[in-house]
Length: 214
Image (tube, rainbow, N blue to C red):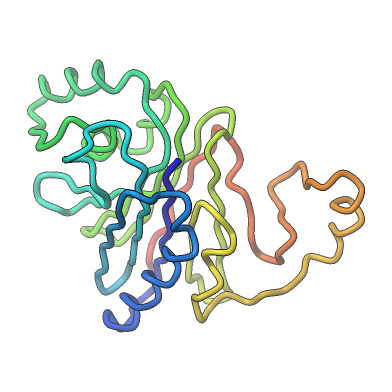
């Protein structure tokens, strides 16, 4: 079990963003006791807590493509990553690790939003494109791995493996979704994409999205 956090906006102070993303990642430290990693630019911050399973030495995240224009945070396991890697190597992609995470970032570079259709496994991931300031998110067909997101009135986006990781971010408003409270008290679950926090949603299984600055 790993976990990721992230936020994207029009522009932010990098030093403040570093503090915020670290605080967000600290709240999901239990998901990844083997390490943490961060990527911060003027428009995005990504954080990851890692449980080492594949490529114990070279699988740290966030992970990048060759020119570092793409950055990924990922939770899950891709069962057919070796076949996909072989296909990508034939297409000219150069790998620096043996992890399934790197297959995702190169796969997105090659196939774009069609990448999830090629994957067999359980996954939730977010990929930042520094060239066009966009963030792509996807979740596996059965929704095995969690993916939550929140967007405020001006378009700032938060993503993460757990809702509580949003708490340190200044744009997040802690508002109870009162309309769904009776349902939650009855079955202890909300079956659609809403949650008990207003504005916080589960990305449904077999879904993806693209957020873009502006």
